[in-house]
Length: 68
Image 1 (cartoon, helix red, strand yellow):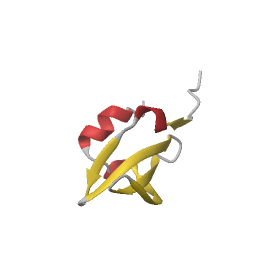
Image 2 (cartoon, rainbow, N blue to C red):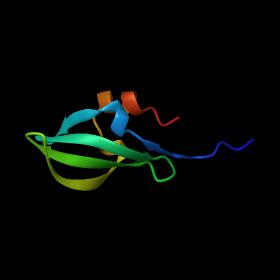
Image 3 (cartoon, helix red, strand yellow):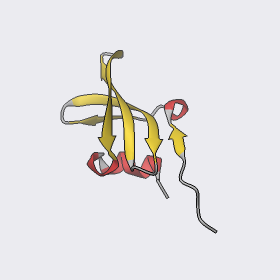
Image 4 (cartoon, rainbow, N blue to C red):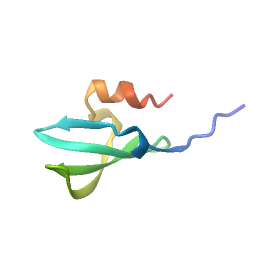
């Protein structure tokens, strides 16, 4: 049977990480596209939402999300 790819909401898990000197919070993971919606944080203020490829995330963050 084919496994259905889903969009996973990550807001409840409070996954925050730092990449390129900026702090981000994970919002939603799109398994079909292997991308992640992240919110750019600046001292706990929301600055904007970006779409980041899963491959560009830090290794520790990838282990928390586990796409398979």
